[in-house]
Image (cartoon, rainbow, N blue to C red; front, side, top):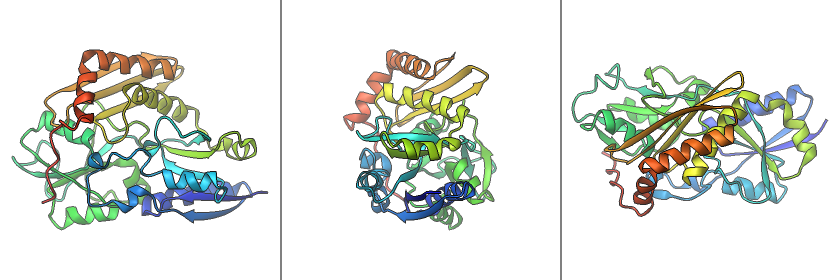
Length: 312
C-alpha cells in the first residue's frame, strides 16, 4: 500500500490524534510517517487566544507543508480549522466524534454553583467566559494557555479554583481525574466542531481522498457541517464568543447556538431543527444576527469588548 506522511502539531493531544489516525491507516496496510510542525499558536503562549486574533493560527504552517508536498495529509482538531479553508485544500474526512461538551475541573469544588464568590476560573475562550459570566458574574476569569498537562498542573498548584476544558481532549488523554461536571450544551454551548478531527488534504487529491474515505463519519460530517455553517454565517473564528452544538437523529438535525458579549451581559441563544446542515446553520446564524448578534460581533472586532484580566 501507500506511504502516507501526516503533518501534525507537537502537543500531547495533537500527537495522540495523529497517532490514532496513523494506527487506523496502518490497519489498512499503509506505511505512515509523522512530521511534527510548530504553528503560530504553539509559539504564542503568553497571550490569551482572544487577543491573538490570527486566522489559522494552529493550521497555517501545516497547510504550507501540505502545499509543498512535504506531507500528504494533516490531522487537525476540527475546531482549529477556519470555516473558509485557504485555496487549494479540502477536508477529506471528519472522524467519529468524541464528546463535544466542555468539562468543569476543580480540586476543591464539585460544581460551578459551588464556587465561592470571586473564585478564579481559568479559560482563554471568550465563548466560555461569556457563558460563565452570565450565570456567575462574580467569578474572576483569567487566561489559561498551554497544553492539557500544563493547564491541569496550574489547577493542581492552586493558581485557579477551577478551569474549563474540552471533554474530548481529556477523554483522549485519560486526564479526567479532576472533572467534576460535564456541562450541558444548553448551559455551556461548545465550540463549533469540538470533539471531531478534520483530515485535510490538497484539493483534488483523489488518491488520498480514496485512502481516507473510510474515516469519514456521516453523523460527525452532518453535525459539524451545520455548526461550521453557523460560524461562517456569523463571520467568526475560535477567538469570538460564538458556540454551536448540533445533534443528528435520523435525517433531523437539532442545532443549539449562542452569540454573546464577552462579559456575559448579553448571551443570545437559539435552537432550531432542520434536515439540510448548511441551510440550518445559516438560518440559525441569520436569526442570531437579527436578534443582536451583528452588534455584538461588531463590538468584539472593534476591540471594544471587555478586556480579559491578566493571569493571577
